[in-house]
Length: 569
Image 1 (cartoon, rainbow, N blue to C red):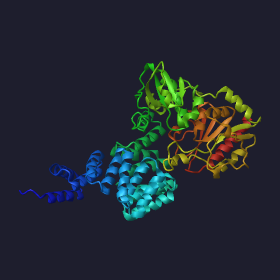
Image 2 (cartoon, rainbow, N blue to C red; image 1 turned 30 degrees about the horizontal axis):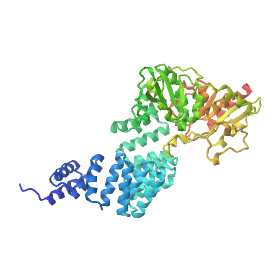
Image 3 (cartoon, rainbow, N blue to C red; image 1 turned 90 degrees about the vertical axis):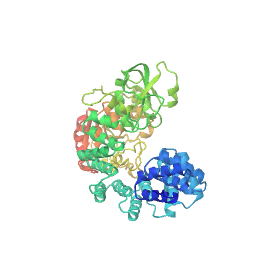
Image 4 (spheres, rainbow, N blue to C red; image 1 turned 60 degrees about the vertical axis):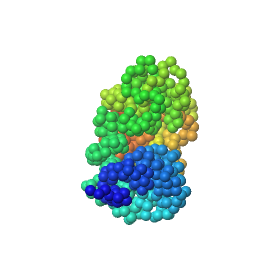
């Protein structure tokens, strides 16, 4: 058999590559390059194939060789930058992508890849500019359109996002990224049913893992927890490597009281024991073992309310170690003055630099405070914790008693707006935003005889929703310095009424009577239907029956408050 010419041999490999016979093409390119080392066309094709199959390390190695051989090649540098981006070498990736653009300023793909890099590192405005530049050069860049749509989604601009996804679908009908993006944009605009219909119209019964995940989240928002769980379990079967569906699955399980299974799924989150990112890597993860001569570092995670809820288990952790150090740095610093006296905590740090200080019992392990549920296999019905487990400092309570005007009225603290969750963008914070209530809807509470309303709304809502002073409200929140002040103010009240915020957790942890105004698609800790929760015995839950409809909830609260105020004042 006569051996093919070198040119024909490479042409045959290119034909296999284009026909989708990727493994045949890969083996052929590698064999060809052993016979023809440094062949630039083969290096370029093999590098592109490695990118296509997700083998970014081999892609980077191959494309670095090609870039050295072709110092004037914008394509080689663009592809190399793309491979390095996926390996997490962001600075090096940016260098090669900028070199590509310098060599060919109107290379739309390079601008698109630079935008992808900026989006990956949180530089949203730079990403937007890069995608828009790519589209100025080539308006049919589908990748730029879908990524620009995602930027608009994260900024909360659903109309602009929809425009991008519609343009992408006009160019490439059935583009999965555009279909999913369009559904997400509809959900952001409040049309969750339209979003579900969008997915079913385009995917029929052939859902991708990403589509199943979004359908699961939309079904969860609807309040169909069994349906959501079925969707999410389908994703975990198809793609067991994905973390997002397992975190959402944990929400479903915990919501239904399946705590043992739920905690395990919850640990797949980034900071969990099964997650991808563990801060303070010099300390090993704690698995619940005894440390009779050493300290345990517990670091904060998630929101203020989460930390307040889970600090109750610090005493359980402390029973297994010689000393417990709680780190409340950056965002969580306002909790430090209050939690210094919580049971089980030996010291509270607000500066990670203090971890290097010499200790009689050196730090031997670390864990997130949110991992206590898994480590202690918590079931709130059986894992008993003494309440109150948080007490306001006496001196602060006296200070706030002096600040408040003297009255014989029934004092009710109110909080109606939940701020964005830490690190959340407009889309991922969508369920969180639905917990808030327009201040005007609280008007019936201010009309109840014998009731005095006290603001606990430290985080300012949008200006358009700031209180109408026609509604009587005592607002001293500008004088609140930290959560010790909030606790002291609550200690001087008769009742707290609030949406799902840290205020609810704090009042419950103090044993103060507290009413939760709860949205339909509830957070997992409040259960599905009950008006009480074992997490906080002093808490009563008033639930939405229709998503977004607060009027019935407020009418019930006002009627109940009127009765309580007559008895309590």
